[in-house]
Image (cartoon, rainbow, N blue to C red):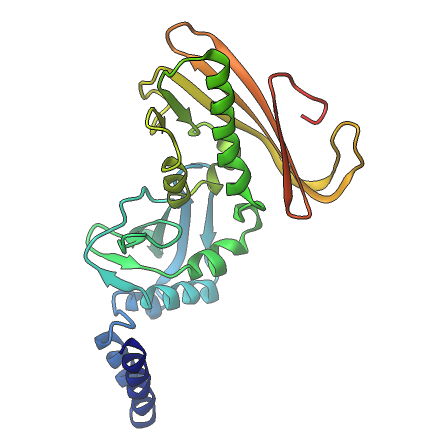
Length: 286
């Protein structure tokens, strides 16, 4: 039935394109929920720039002033679906749309689609579901915001593995709060939807801290030391060419005893295989 309905909709659009002008087609798309009219102000040539600010890395933002880029943003936003509710995730970016030198519209944006069909782009007044074209066609144009290879596969699992090692070492079941707020070198690669997936894998007495000052028995602080492409090798092994290396230091601090335990994480990827080592001492690879 859904397939028949889709064919019917397409047939209507084809007929409309033959019998009507662009204005009529646009109106039909709005009625069918394929388009909205909320961003028509962007076609009036008054929008001079769009500032996109990362919410986790306050020092990271980029500015779009190219009319072609602004037109691409319009095409994406005008095709967004209007919904009643917004995403429950914290926004990853804030979009400020400027007319001359004044902010006329501000939107919060969550990378990726919300699992409960909440709007991943929203303002104070309206919520929209936006496809991942913003991620793939706009944000990925900036090389330094492009997520490193397999980031989620090495970053979050290494945090969990260190928890397991720490638990086995201290032999207690105190609550652990994971602090990634200060991990600024990779803050722009951490997205709310990925963080939610990670949190669902954690034990009941382990959680990600919203703030470094949130209460917990033991705080796990994550500091990424490097994530880059190159030629690397492990001790007593041949070099891995065209590979990626990930290095982080993870520190557990017991808030009652003030005792600390450090772990050094080194991961090297070659041919899509990650070899990860976790040590209490800093190795030559680190």
